[in-house]
Length: 318
Image 1 (cartoon, rainbow, N blue to C red):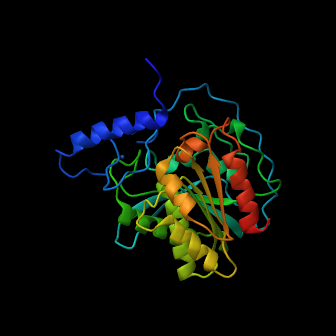
Image 2 (cartoon, rainbow, N blue to C red):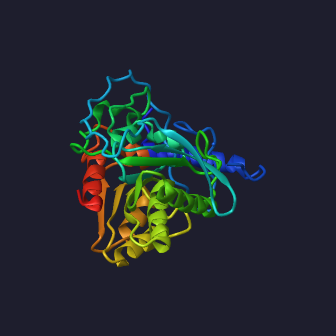
Image 3 (spheres, helix red, strand yellow):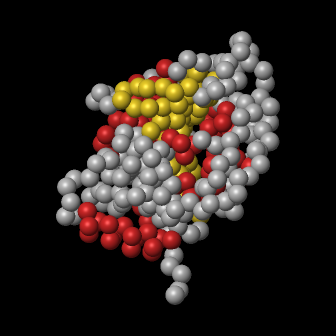
């Protein structure tokens, strides 16, 4: 039988599950790497992806050594944190301290098929404190192929899980997820050891809209706190059109950069990314239909992780 494309296969699976879901009660928002139920929404949700391919664990990546802490010893271990959205919803996050304080902070927002654990290798890679992580399964969980970190640079990192997405989201909650993204940016701004004027947001799929929306929102509360948003496959998923968030960042003084990475076969992201514009905006289009975290693979060129480092250099003025 002729092999189906990933995009067609995803569409067929989603269509079948929606037919079943229509006769059921309203779903309650959970898949990390292989969702057990389809995402449900009034308009097409971000594409779900096929189950992860099991691979042999790779050797730990060699990281550039960060400079010694300038203000005493800063523990490298990630810290579990709880915080609240404006409607009272309790959210879970994880803070990875940088080697020296006050530190520039990268906020990482996950996609719908997963939770904050999707960043378990990328967060310590950005932290750059000799705690590189590798895992079996998806390539973004294996740091062995990641590009070298910026020499001598250690970023603080904050991750969190959107409500009802432990292990992955099984229903769509656009308006509440927007509240979660805003709450995460506010909490990031309050973290001890973080430079509150040097924050950048990065996200995939629902998190990519959250990054742009959350960055714009934070600057409305604390001018120039967020210095830019890096998005993998946005799709207007959190009620705010991606182009509007990009325009708002570009209208600030100075303008804040917004970069969009998307695949030509990912229709939602094509529409969102190609609608955005501005001198602060850059879009990078890939062949195929990879969505969100699936752009983060060693054989996908240009390297999305290298582009992320380029973006961080630009946004933080490194």
